[in-house]
Amino acid sequence: MINLVIADDEERICKLIVALGEWDKIGIQVIGSAGNGLEALNIIRKEKVDILITDIRMPGCDGLELISRVKAISPDTRIVIISGYANFEYAQAAVKFGVKDYLLKPINKKALNDSLEKIAGQIETDRKTNITIQDIQREHKDAIYKIRSIMISDLLTKPEQKVTETVLKEYYHFNVHAGLFQAFTMKIDNKTDEIKSETRKLFWDKMHDFLENRLQDQCFDLVMMNLDNYMYGIMNFGEKAKDSIRKGIRDCFNQILVLKELYGEDKISIGLGSCVKGPEDLAKAMRSSFITVEERLIEGTGKFLDADVSKQVLFERKLLDKFTRDISQALETLDNEGVISAVEDLQREAGECRNVHGWELFELVNQAGTMFVMRLDIKDKKELLEKFRIRNENCSSQDELFMNLRDFLNQLMKEILAAHQDDSIRPVRIAKQYINNHYQEQITLEGVSEQVGLTVAYFSVLFKKETQVGFAKYLANIRLEEAKRLLRETNLSVADICRQVGYNDLKHFTHIFEKDAGIKPTSYRKLYG
Image (cartoon, rainbow, N blue to C red; front, top):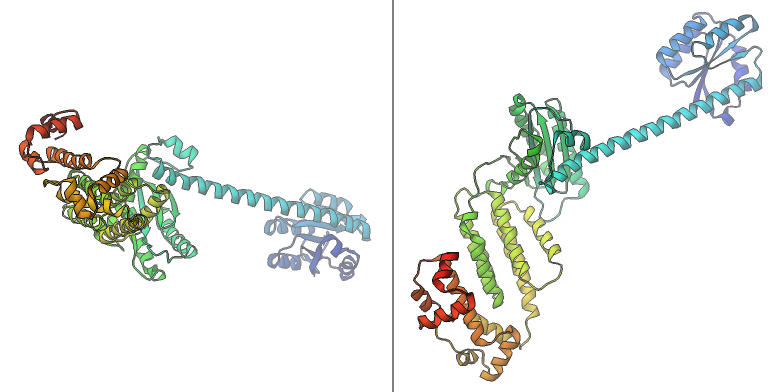
């Protein structure tokens, strides 16, 4: 609705205008009348007035002065003046000061309504234009926010992408200045998915407000993005602000910890990455903050974690090599206990490494799960591993992390065993397990057949059908693989290795080894030892 005020020192004129106006048809409501200019100004100060109809001559405030003062306090108010023939030239001069129209006395109904309808149309057009402009501005602001958020997403998923100052400014709308860049990653560990999305969003919005209010005056620019249980941020600031920035983030994190009661548990952590000096190292900065927050697996949750620049320690231990051998053997014989034992050994050996990083344990467990799944003949491996990775991300300690690995493999083994309950398969599985446990001894087809309770002829056919190789070949493969491992990882002599894998004749062992590997045992050691 359009609001209108009438100002005239003659009350009958005010009443006449009210009587003549087609208010409902035009969409105007009369919200007041005034007997002089000062009264009119008081109404305009208190109310939103769209149209003012005023006499050009009134006591208390000259017409041109009234127009000037109205325009000063309410520039959008349209003014229509009323004048007699004696003041016609005066009224014409007033039009030059922004008056939209003038009406001659006596007031003519048609002239009044034509003028009001024209002005009302202009007001509605302007309102629609303003709404459109506001929508465009809002959409533009949302688009810029999304583009800036994409910058963080690209840094996480496309670390090889070349990032320059020009790219940051023109593509990502990031306000770059000479100084330092630093990233942070905040994490909520949520294994049971008890946090509703709207509650999580409220939590992240609150953290966003804390950080923006605290850091925006100290940063050249600050971009933040939240995704599920993570919140990421990239900052650009002057070198002198480094300590202040760190303190500001810590203070904001302490504030957000007060809200942890929303979740019932203290499962919130934040990692502050290393500082870098150039846009080309932004992906490195983002990665640094991400792996820093993984230190909660070692240090515990609810902590402010600083980047640890010390080197990784697990790679040299080759823990995955041993784990792979252990689970391969366990899968070969469908030995669920062997799988659990392999996980326990992996955890124990990783825990014995001094100064191990949380991110190393995270990667170790992810790779262990991947190696296991890739050895299975199952569908939807990618989806299965993605769910496994997400569960790993929501672990709060290394014990939880390895427990998740154990439960993951244990569940898969149960499904595998359920699919291998057929009686025709069970004897072969038992035979494989027996061979893997006794290959160092002088075992024979007859002896293994007796172990599984089948005749030699029937067991021989069944074994070859299930394994695609004969008994002798299978036994030789097991022995040769162990011999290769001993040649790579130990200093035992070839003769000792020959005996340790179940052969008494060194010449015979050397012959079958060369036939399998293409080179003699001593040459194999030189190449792979």
